[in-house]
Length: 310
Image 1 (cartoon, rainbow, N blue to C red):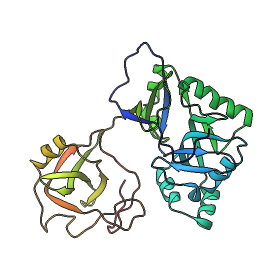
Image 2: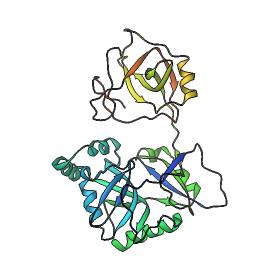
Image 3: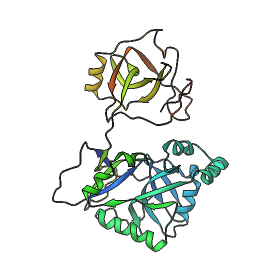
Image 4: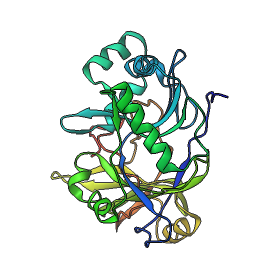
């Protein structure tokens, strides 16, 4: 029996703190800022995104590495791009849209890498084996095949104290966005949130300049900050709000008119996208601390404004 794409990857649920020590040993891994992928190696290589899309045409160097592995395997990994000593998610997003000659050129100029952390198949399907055995198999695969770039083995430890150090801001500067926490004896359960994910908690002050959805029942928030010239600059868009959060914020926000500094402006829906966000402006923008559930993309241009978000 062989696995064939698409295969649902095993997922993680977010936690606010490290779990208390229990009877079952846990393993800790760095969470890199990249794309989750399943790599099908062998004569018919396939690079599957988390949602099942084929990323192979955008990352031809990874497809070639998968074909050259010399064994049929299915490897769970984070696809990343390094730039100037850190993981560059913006460059990764840009590369994902390229095809053909442009993709080949990007592969030479900004090569992608695979930070591998699990193996679902290697000679046989391994999903019913405990994680520590699958990890051992993955390590043996690296040793027996002499794997080097673009392959990399994810840093892992059973020491919670060591894992906690990976939440230090110094690691954030390198593109490590948090910590993965896994039961050493767990099986691989496609589509289930059987792992834990602890993101680094950081806060920042910002103004709510606009919302998606109705102002009295916002779906997400558009945050801004004043630059040295006093202009309100878009810096982030939140993840979708829960119903309680939407109700709480909707009670204090009010629609804005032509006096709003963003009046008449539109914002890009994402990196490289020509579509715009349908947003509603808020009057007397409210200042708040951006909590951990806010998604803050970095370096994303606004399609029709004269600034770049940070």
